[in-house]
Length: 150
Image 1 (tube, rainbow, N blue to C red):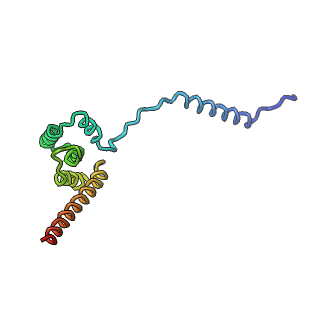
Image 2 (cartoon, rainbow, N blue to C red):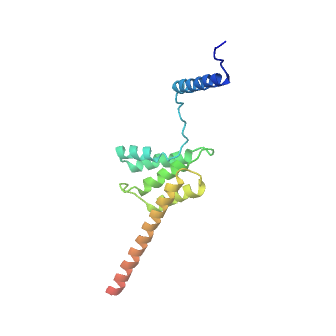
Image 3 (cartoon, rainbow, N blue to C red):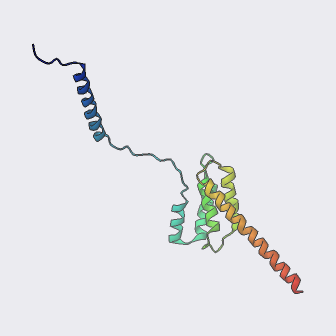
């Protein structure tokens, strides 16, 4: 007779306490799964780092051009085209050719519009176009100087 009855409220608190312990215990057991990141960048940095160690542009360019011709039809060539564009524009390349470089960057932009390399290729294409415009202006200035000197 004088005992206190346990009601629904006691079971509710017991249930909440159990949930709290379960959630804390389960968080401690969860291991982080390795995250698989899709390719969000061009692999050109690795190529340029290996080039800096060897500094043989002719051999490296020949290898990359051979790789481009031997590439299967179902594989994307965006990285390879981008790397070729970088190699032709590289300041240490004795045979640098901005027109060829620009052509490779334009191919990346036009043929692979969803590539991770497109943003960087657009930037490089813009820079190389500005260099070509500046070179044309320099030639025009030299011609004007020759005409005025006569």
